Amino acid sequence: MAKIGMLGAGTWGSALARMLCNSGHEVTVWSAIEREITEFSATRRHPNLPDMVFPEELKFTTDLKETCTDKDIITFAVPSVFVRSTAAAAAAFIPDGQIIVDVGKGVEPDTLKTLTGVIEEEIKKTGAHDNIRLVALSGPTHAEEVARDLPTTIVSACEDLKAAEFVQDVFTNSCMRVYTNDDVLGVELCGALKNIIALASGMSAGLGYGDNTKAALITRGMAEIMRLGLAMGCKRETFAGLAGIGDLIVTATSVHSRNNRAGYLIGQGMTPEEAKKEVGMVVEGINALPAAMELSEKYGIEMPLCHGVQAIINEGASPREVVRQLMERPRKPEAEASLNV
Image (cartoon, rainbow, N blue to C red; front, side, top):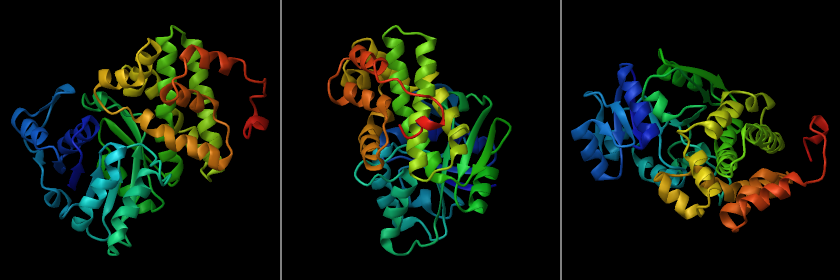
């Protein structure tokens, strides 16, 4: 049995907490929102996961120290924009040598760091955490299905293989199969940028386009992500794996995807702000756009789909006009010669 502190009580953190608790682990869930903790403790339900029941053994608290003290694993499950502030608040309670797992997906726009990098930088500011081990846990994993114990696969990524394997052992059960990977940057980059392509996929459906368009967006979207990842030193195999094409497929096609849903609403005519309000939860693809634009420029990588989404979300461009521009781009080869084009 492992002792696990779960920082964040959103749908993904809650679904994982329930799963881990049902696997026999001792789990404490923290949220800074007292109303959430009070409600979950009393009802044993999450409003956005209505069919899921929290086990009685699962603990809820607003005490950050309690959640981080004497734990085998501390898991960050907060939206990307709150990762740095949460890490700063938790740093004083985290011992050196701690295994920290991040299950969020994003790239910080100001620093261009992935989320494990943000956590590491913030926690190491105290000068007492030189040996913390950071693991990225990412893959095609909708909370709504994990909450129902449907078969799911995920990747535990860390340069320290022993840490990756420990997380693999803790999170593996009859409905969750965990693989390991040492390409942390590649895994995290895929997790962040696939949300932008999922927005595009949703927009195409909202515009009335079909499966041909969706398949094109997924395939060419992964080509963009891979081009950037290879330029940043990531491994090619990661993009063909669960954290790469696997996560992109599920996020760009599923009814559970917030990014896909937001994109659909925008394609139907809503403004980005209206779509975010309608979805009612964080749309990480929108948060990822500034960093994607900066990375594209920094590494000199052409990313027409991501730039098209940027034009629609932040520059007021018409989705149909962006589609026209994409379809009229100069003709190019698909194969190896096109990787840097």
